[in-house]
Image (cartoon, rainbow, N blue to C red):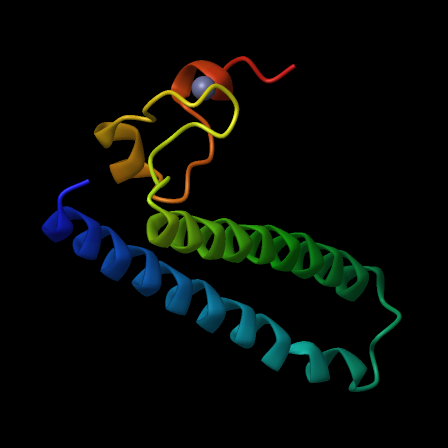
Length: 109
Ligand SMILES: [Zn+2]
């Protein structure tokens, strides 16, 4: 990968990582409000479930972004983790932390 491209990708991945971290912080900043006297209502339980699901998916995204940055350092960024093919610029642009090429991703088990 050309250096200029690689540093643009890195800036993009790091920007995404900061954004996701900020979202996670906000989610957890709201945790306290659950304990203010109405913690047992079903609405709060449902909201808490949504927040946990969102939090889990953000944590996964964060993990993907970290891995993508590691791969960028290792020079393997942009390779499919399953078949080793090029993931492709268009797909990486849409999903910078993509682990799989489009063929493998659409062939999930
Ligand atoms: Zn593949």
